Amino acid sequence: MPSNHPIRISPSILSADFVNLERDLGRISTADLVHVDVMDGHFVPNLTLGLPIVERIQQVSPLPLDVHLMIDDPLRWAPKYAETGAFSVTFSIEAAPDPRAVAKAIKNAGSRAAVAIKPGTPIEPVLDLLDDIDMILVMTVEPGFGGQSFMGETMPKLRAAREAIDASGREIWLEVDGGITAETIVTAVENGADTIVAGSSVYGPAGTPEPVDRIAALRASASQVA
Ligand code: DX5
Ligand code: ZN
Image (cartoon, rainbow, N blue to C red; front, top):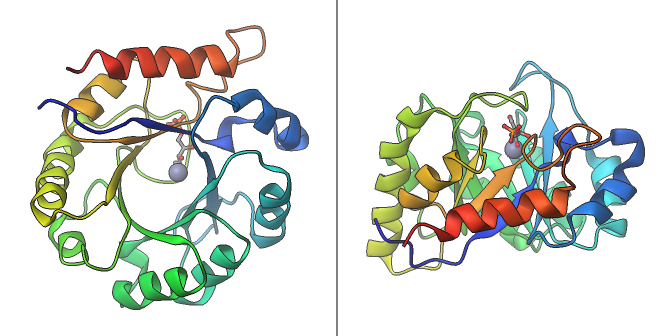
């Protein structure tokens, strides 16, 4: 499918150096957003960072925050992340009995509202929310850890989301997260993604290319999709 959408790159600081976060935020100046993974050790079997740290990141980040909540009880917590000034707050549909209420609460608190969907969850419940959300995040790995392999079997859902968004005529972004490299970004963009999270492929090990060079490589790959 031709891509008629601008491509946004959102590096995940899960792969940055948590002791040098401000420095590592400064190393992705050519990105569009910064992706902040909040995990609670309940919704996913991993624990990262919470509200006080997101507040500080918001204060020092040169880029808008793309906060990705992998937590239980998003109705309680998501508006608090929006109140930090985050550009966008994403919650997981599997954790939200009333996703419409969570989206409204995020927007009332001043952020764009987005819904994430795990690889095994059908897309249809998300497509019922198009009037209430600003972005869909199709997870391309099981949420919880960086550095996993891209799951190509999620692409039919991504394409279905793209078709529904285009049919709606609404300005809804379509994000992918997990296992994105200079190779897999081509598949994701071909299937309709316009907003790309990349952690380990942006923040590689020390001594390997700088994040800005890796971001440029991702953009170059995405632009091959004509
Ligand atoms: C995984 C997180 C991702 C993670 C992606 O649950 O939501 O944002 O940082 O890492 P990579 O790009 O290494 O797969
Ligand atoms: Zn994420």
